Amino acid sequence: MTLSAQAPSDGVSIRLESASGDVTAPQPLVISAPNLTGTAVFIARASAAPGTVVIKAMLGTDTREATVTILAQPAQLTSLQLDNTTIDAGQTTHGTVRLANAAPVGGTTIRLSSSSSAVTVPREVIVSAGSTSATFLVESSEQINAAVTATITGTLDGVARIASVRVSPRPLSTFFKWSAAEPVYMLGSSGTVSSPPATFQADALCGDNWVTVYISDPRWLIEFSMPAGQAIRPGSYPNAVVDIRNATSPSLYISGSSAGCSITRGTGSFTITDAVFNNGRVERFRATFSTSCGSGGWPAISGEISLQSPAPANTATMCLR
Image (cartoon, rainbow, N blue to C red; front, top):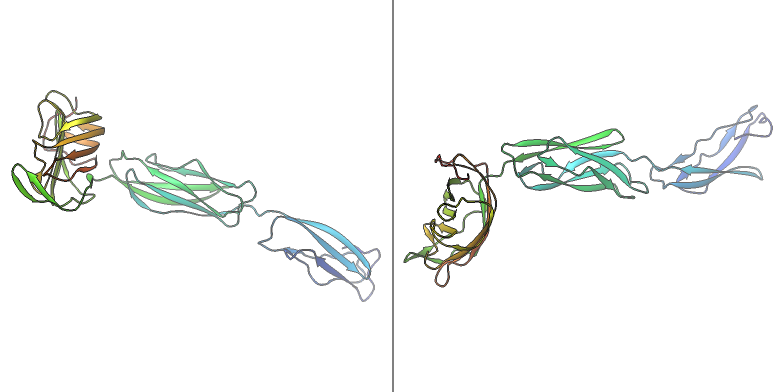
């Protein structure tokens, strides 16, 4: 504040006002003799919205005004968190970035990166104007043979925040969708079979034209096969027969607790989407399947089987040539 003349011996008291509660004015400003000027500090609240505020200085009947502009606080990245820090290959999780204050008009862009090609994130995520957080998708590859730990980094104005996720190879697993235990019929005998667990460790064998996956507890087996002389390859097989390595047709056989469809009654179909074999080893195998035993047999069974990096099979046959 500047006076037109030096302050008298007892000083000058100037009353100050702010037109908005977002800016606090000190009370009062005293300019002591023989000074011409004085300084007052106006404080904007941390939560003040960007805009302009009129402030007033009053001495007697004389009033002077000035306009103060409140600027938006620069966005500050405070954290990056993941919903899950451990996932299986092929699974996804979500990440969240958070700011210290609301993003300004136009939003705030956070750059993202992953330290591993087995885990991918978008190149950036935008925190919308007025918001303090945003989420993004974290995806993992299905094709990994050993556990991978990836560091996810978010960066804003040179400030980085990180989080890590560990991705484990998918175990041999199968997913069945069917009703609870029911009477079944197989080769003239009847019994009761329980559904396998959703995910379990298993063994896999293969030959030139077949793949068999089995577990011992509970006892389950599923086999996909091609006619003699035809290698097993990705593709759709809508008219498969329920049989054990049928010589003339694609075949599908499922057995649980030593019971399964009668090979004289069952029909089935399956689609192989991935099949990689190496010197008798099933490296990857994915397929969907469906069987029906007809009247007097099992209820219809449908599902998906997904194998990833199982232990080497106990056969030296090259399964896919």
